[in-house]
Length: 134
Image (cartoon, rainbow, N blue to C red):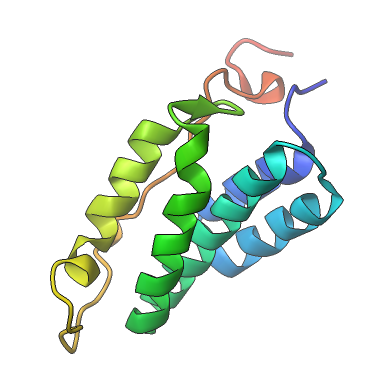
């Protein structure tokens, strides 16, 4: 049995496939069922997915706004929470969103750099996905 909720893992899988709307949906169900300290963490992940969804689809203003709230939800969980290295993840998100954050006015025609979209890798890795596991 995995130490992580399957909806958390499904959201990560979808996120890493750049299926940001779908990862948001998977995490939103988990968020709705969660009470206690993990709730804001899931909210931050949901907003990371929404911000990336907006950026990919050219909604730059929405992407920048949701990115900011995403970071504020995830900051308290640094340096690591539920296997996610938040120092690394937040740094990767900031690098990805840098073109939207550099100026107050959003320049036209900014597109997301696919090479800068972060991926989520958990440590410890989910038991079912560890090498050498049956």
